[in-house]
Image (cartoon, rainbow, N blue to C red; front, side):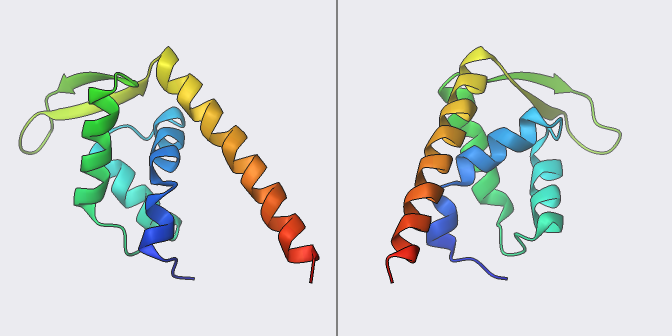
Length: 107
C-alpha cells in the first residue's frame, strides 16, 4: 500500500530512529531497508536530511568508517538522548493509535 508522503513525513524521524536502534546504521542501508519494508517511494535525500537533523540535535553518535567502495561512510548509533526520543515517539504513537481507534468506533 502506498502511503501519503505528507503522512509519512510526520513519523519518519521515529521510523529512522527505530531502524538505527535495530542496527541498521548508515544512510543508504536505512533507505534500502525502508524501501524493502514497503516504503517504496521514500527518497534517499529525505533520509539523509533526517540523519543530518538527528546528528545536529545530538540524538545519535556518528562514526566515520572507510567503505569497501567509495568514500567514507557515516555510521549512526543512538545515544541516550536518541533512545529517549525514540521512547517518546512510541508513547505518542500509542496515544495516536488509541485515539484513532476510538474515533473509528464512533461511527
